[in-house]
Length: 223
Figure 1: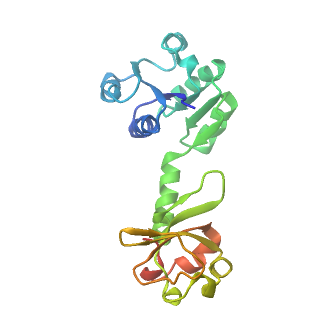
Figure 2 (figure 1 turned 90 degrees about the vertical axis):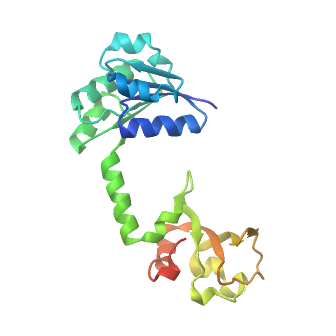
Figure 3 (figure 1 turned 135 degrees about the vertical axis):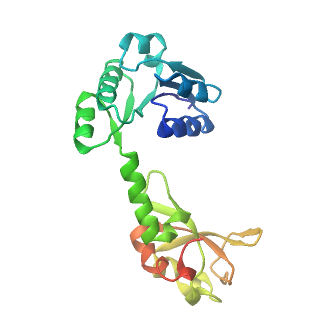
């Protein structure tokens, strides 16, 4: 179902969110108090408005109450982010996501009506740390609604020349092979499919299980 998303604050985070949400097929209303930022995103979103998001009447007039989801992506101005979140709560918008700078800021945002808090800088730092320590994670993504990861890996040396049955793959590695890529060809694996050098295995499994055999030498990491 197509949703209407209100994005307030058009810095790097807000711009990226607008672009992604539009590409996902949803309607976006973008708001910022700076004219140049509004002008920059105007051709991407359905509606771009220059206004002070702490002005309740201005938000009401531009149709903010019609949003299914509101994202408060305001950066350094903590007071503005709190006031804006409170106004959106009064508008009874079903889901409000707010950007927080600190834990205290997050607590205040929750108290005034935010349903979900994000820490972009913290999350980016944690993700970078994970990739530096476990490079194979860069080729994996989370499967929505589960704790499973899906991604591509090279077969480790002990797998080469053996079939999935011989390896007892699912029980040995606590992962499932969804398909095998061989050059330009994608193979749906059977139990008697032998793994070859150069294969790329698309696997699904839990991170804590897969990291025991994926992290290590380069040939064991994701691709």
